[in-house]
Image (tube, rainbow, N blue to C red):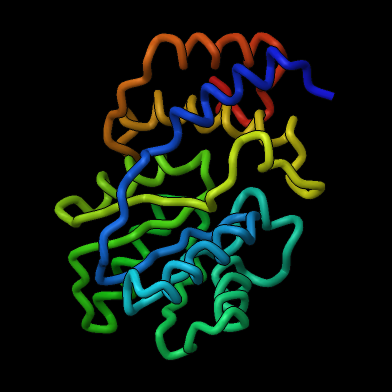
Length: 216
């Protein structure tokens, strides 16, 4: 059981990671693969609500799925979308990427191969990865109109048996570290991190939530 003070610190990171973008109709919806199948459901819902005429699933087997799944993330996500009623002909699958940068780069190459030039995207990701997705997309494919969204789930309701709370907090701590250091490495655009958010990060690291950190 995680103490209440840890949950409050983690929720501060959670809130910062949300971009709070308003959605507008777009040329396509792009769902980035992960271990959370609710991302696929959110993307399919948006398609079925008419937000875009094309649905892209991007993801091979990444850090959190390569030792758990044999089916690639994009293929698994696409199957969920079809089951929910999305026509297969309105789905594109990119299933070779293994990280967020490759999600963008490989999807860009796939669309070029198909002769498609979308100018606007709705990006669908896990709630705590909205900001990293935004910063990565802007670095790798600037000039597009993008809005980022995620499954509409509150922090207190997000953890599951497959994604327990301590696991989730470790991932969020590692993701905030990446938001801090990745711009200098050329992976993302710079994002301002408020002092209180970084203080929460440091307290969580001190409390032992360091399993997803990049060492050195």
